[in-house]
Length: 264
Image 1 (spheres, rainbow, N blue to C red):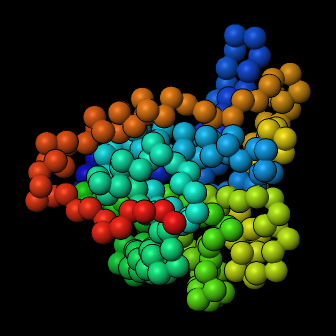
Image 2 (tube, rainbow, N blue to C red):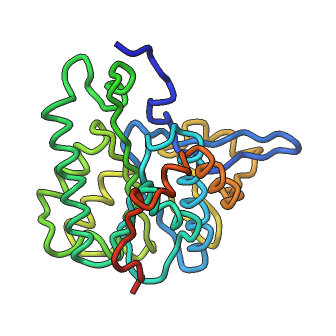
């Protein structure tokens, strides 16, 4: 049995930003043990929300062991995360940008979850994170970003979405759903299933509402100001590339480009 390797445990929390008071800075995390969260913003706050999401993903990719984490994005429309895009050629990032790709990627993630429950999760390894502490055969974590304006698509049944959000976390699949606050008024039951399952962070007029659901020690907000995560993304991208075996990755035999990477 392999020695316990804490680095292969999924991080205990998602870094959302920092609390500031004078020269003091305290990182603010929200727990990851409930599987993720929803980030909801108004129109003027969208860029701030995008910066948080991209910074969070790149920080995790650059600090976790190479290939221990992959980011999957369900989104179409204008391209959001330019600093994540180069990582698609290293198979650390992929985007489902039309309905067919969304259905295919969701099915892949479903199959991953089902197979892990069938083959790996058991009484003494109740989660993939715990499995990775005890096994030499490490499983890759998935961080799934979902644009609620585009996903779930109409061809994905409600029961599949329900099963997905209820079982994903233990199987090493974490979800961050995002979208304009207007999505909360949607009558789509599959969308509402995602919204109801995860805790919510709202950004209005550029200000983040940090509630006790998000951060246990909300009393610190009385004398600290919160600044959302907006890191040097190009530097984090370079760190992620440095962690990889670039010589192997640049071997023409190992490069698999998508047939069509145009975002419509």
